[in-house]
Length: 338
Image (cartoon, rainbow, N blue to C red; front, side, top):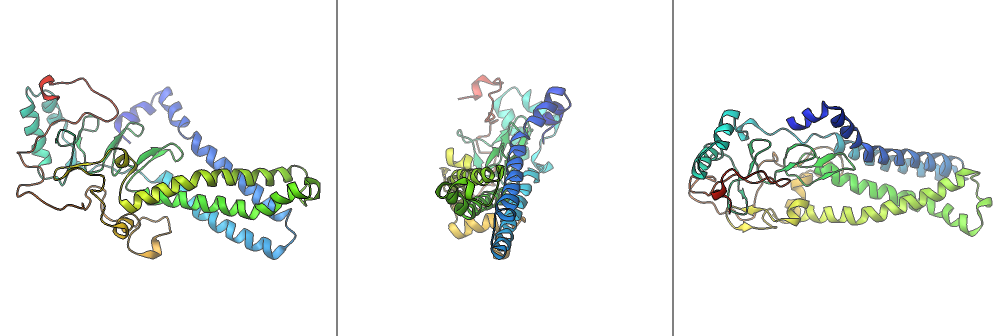
C-alpha cells in the first residue's frame, strides 16, 4: 500500500474506513458460513434418508467449497506487490521535476530515468506515463489505484468484494474464485432442487426437515440460484478477457503503444498463448490457486513487435507528465498541456 494510505490509517477516520472496506468480505463470509450449516446440517444430516447418497453429496460439497474458499482467500490476501526501485524517481529529482521552468527540462529529467526502462505504453499525447502520487514511471499495463493508494501492476480493477485490487499477482486466483463460486452455487442449487420441489409439491409438513430447517433449505436453493445467475455473466466476461489478453480497464480504454497507437488487441497473442500467460503452461496447476502466471508483471509480449533503431524511450520521444486517472492536479506549465 502507498504511504498516503498508511498515513490515513493512523487517524481514527482512516481506521474506520479501513474497517468499513472489510464489510463486503465479511458479508460473503457470513453467507458462506450460513450456507454450510444449511447444506451440511439441515439438508444432508437431518433431511437425507439415503446415507450413501449423503456421503457422496458431502464429499463433493467439501471439495468444491475447499477450492472456492482457497481461491477466495488467495485473491484477498495476495499483495499488489512493490514497485522496483529502478522505476522510482528519487525525491530530489522529483523536486527538480516539479520546479522545472520548462517542459523540455521536465522531459530531460524523465528521460534520464525512463530511457533504459522497458516501457511501450504511452498517454494520448504520446508521452511516457508518470505517476505524480507514487513518483514512478509507470510500467506497461500498470495504473494507480486511488483505493489502495499505490500503482498496481497489470491492474484489472479494484474489487470491494475481495477488498483488494485484481492485478497481475492474483488475477488467476480471482478467475478461479469466480469459477469455483459458480460451481459451488450450481452444485448446491442442483442437489437442493429435489427438496425444494417437494416443499411446494407435497407440502412443507411432509419434508423430513422440521421447524426452521425447512426454510433453511428453501432459502438455500433461492440464494444459491441467485448467486449462480450473477456469477455466470461475470465469470464468462473474465474468461473472455483472459482469451483476448485484456484487462477490464483496457476493455474500456485501449492501451496506447509507442508503435501502433491505441490497440485493444495489442497484447493478444492467440487464445492458447493468452490463457497460458495467466494460468501457465503446466495443466496440473491450471485449476489450483497457486501462482503459475508468466512474466514479472512489468513487461509483456505484444502482438506487433516492430522496434525502432533507437531505444524504447529515446530522447526523441515526446515525454511529459501524465495526469493521474483519478484526479486532475493543478497544471504546473500552462503551455505544456494541450
